[in-house]
Amino acid sequence: MSEVVIFDTETTGLGPAHRIVEIAGIIWDYESDSVVGEFETLVNPERNIPAASTEWHGLTSSSVSSAPTFAEIAPWLANIFHRRPVVCHNASFDLAKVNHEFSLSGMNFALIQAGCTMLFTGKSLKAASDDIEYEIEGAHTAIGDARATLAVLKSLDYRRLINGAGHTEHLAPNIEIAQHTTLSRFQAGLEPRFRLERYSRRLEFEGLDTEKYYLAFLDEVLEDMLITSEELQELSSLSGSLGLSKEDCEELNRVYLSTLESAVLRDGIVTKEELVLVEKFAGLLGVRTSLVETSSESQLALEAGALISATGNAIVDGRVLSKEDLAATVEKRGFKFVYDFAKKDGLALLLADDASSQSGKTSKARKWGIPVMSVDEFLALNGE
Image 1: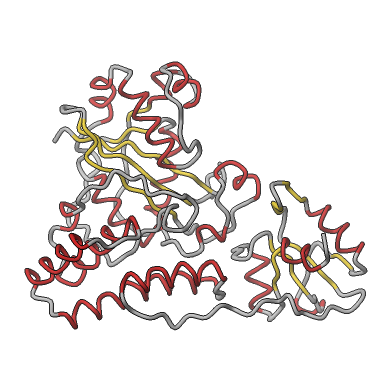
Image 2: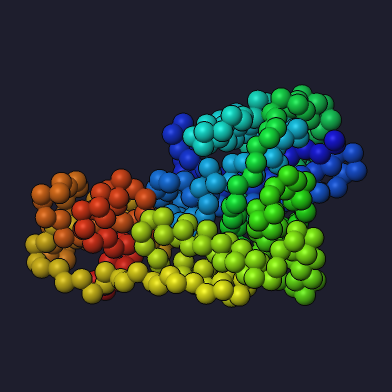
């Protein structure tokens, strides 16, 4: 096989405990110099995304709240990496992050080594791209940076680099893909256009049982949020070959939607944006959703002097508000700000950096029945 996977990740931060929030890659055939296809998905990191990281890649906790966790997509990714050399720009970082995620997922799989274009160039991805007059479109998105890495790779002695990456060290034998959904920036409404180079995932689907095969193919069809007449015919042909009736397919469409609904409900709330997303998928699948938007805390009556806390820095209208800024705003409005709280303190409201915050404080507040409101909603409520 002359295919190599060039991939990139975006994360909640740089430290060893930080998690992946997006992964994307390109399957490139270096013998024919052709792109076989591209893959991309947001990832729910099961922890908060700090404001500093949001400034880098543009993703907030709300952006990824409906995305699958890494554990849910891990078998699929392992099958993509299976027997293919891998290349990244900063391999030591990306491999550590991916392998940490595979470990947390409980999978006996790891990327042993990778080709690193940064080691070959000694430069940042931006500088290396500038050297070859390649303009990065979508810098600091996983797919944008993966495409730039491929452009840099092709300008180097790529055969030597790929040969050094190894071909058989990372194997994923008998790792079965579970039923899962992927969610790209485009599907989540963060990018205006669908621009992935599509490819058939059927090689990765081989060996799946009937229902999982259909659902995996359905996920592929929904990448561009359209189901064309040709795709309808292909779905019909596939269901026929799998022995699925019309009723079976309708039920599997509901199963697909329920997976997305479960992801939305992971944090216990349904935002307006999440409901819009689910309803778009429901319309394409021809099924209905039972989800309703979680009631807003905007009508919450706060007494003067009420205790308010916050989860951390927040980004509002492109500017970072520190916890100290929030404290000053809260005090200015006649409330009392506390930096930490216990159940017995009688906290009236927690200001979260994001509506879908997954911080420890947010989880604690929801567990104790303390109302949670996003910072931007609080500021709008108070006329700022």
